[in-house]
Length: 262
Image 1: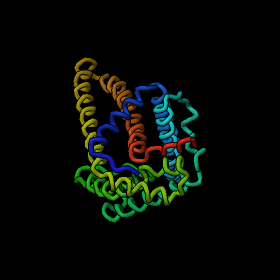
Image 2: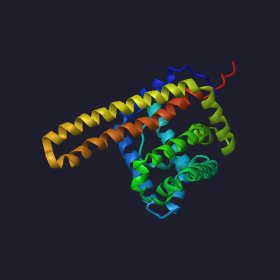
Image 3: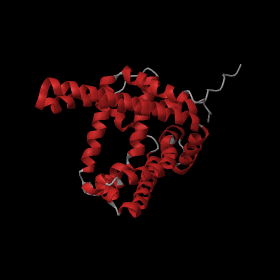
Image 4: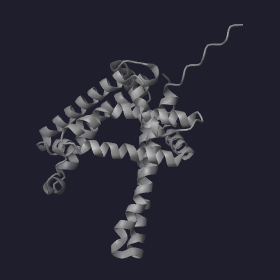
């Protein structure tokens, strides 16, 4: 486990984009397929959300494998979307169960503040009442849930890759992941700032494009705007996924093979 300088946080984002550029078409196809699959699972009342949440570590391992294959100059295909299910699946499913319990605990604590509005929205898909938007209570409880989620995120950041590639049990992988993030908090702070900056740039660009499209297409500007938002989203998300691998590669570098005997 390495401790890296803060500047690596920005480098992870750049590396993620570089990996995306190696095969953007397949990246977009994989991410789009993943989103559609999760949406289909989410359409199943209640149980769909539970299943989708529990499968996140396995799919995270899949996208780590996709990034590693590109990093090592190999070709990628659709089958890699499910490659995480062939790598220490028992540990990944155990992580999924723990992730689900953590999510429910956070939503349960948030329900003490907002009466269960966020919980019903996330699990049941019920639209929050207009009053929750107007009085800012939904934003406040979302900020609380986000704060509570940070240690969970640290524990699960590297855990899927540690179980898939180093064959660690679920709890041990979570332990190493959490302390790896804590030891490298400066790099992760820079990484978070880089993502926020990138998100602001994308948002500003989309805002300007929305104004231009409104002037060009009038009432049809919304349809044209969706054609712009989609490729931006399908560039940002693969870059984000690939940056996870970049952070793992720096903090948990592959062990060097032993030298051949003389």
